[in-house]
Length: 188
Image 1 (cartoon, rainbow, N blue to C red):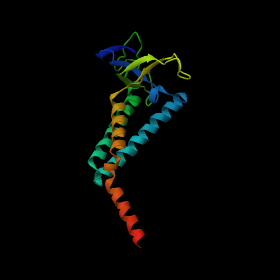
Image 2: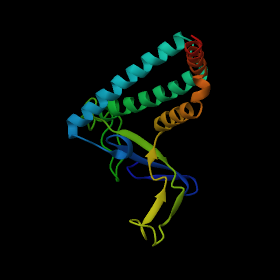
Image 3: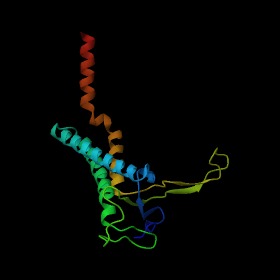
Image 4: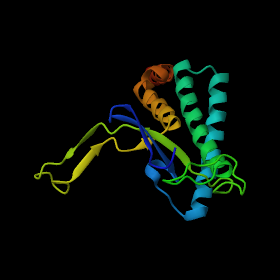
């Protein structure tokens, strides 16, 4: 696919839309090449930390649902790292008129740790115009769910969302232990 090319999956409400994200969420960047290097190294350190924490949780028999959700976060973060670390090294630059080439003769478009992350899932659910009486945005166009994302982003989002929803179930034993400690202190 070329940059910006679309394939409709479910009408115009869910599309495969090819873009390359040079930075963080929503394409935010900072610090040029050094910022990208810092971001890539930070991601690698974070994945190592999550991997260590996951190993610890499995070893100490944490709640299986919690381990599964942390595994989703780990897998998504690892997928995005693989993209940003290697994608620029093994592919030529994509343009609106030309698809990227795998293992181009002159090398990729970026050096190690400086690649972009491929995003391709797009779900523009609601389009419209803000009413004129809405402060600041009156009469401006809006699009609900504008971000373009990938499977790795989805895994991270689902993992975090499920941890937030089921946190009481995942940490039930911890709450019971704290309540027992508090009741023992009150009795003494």
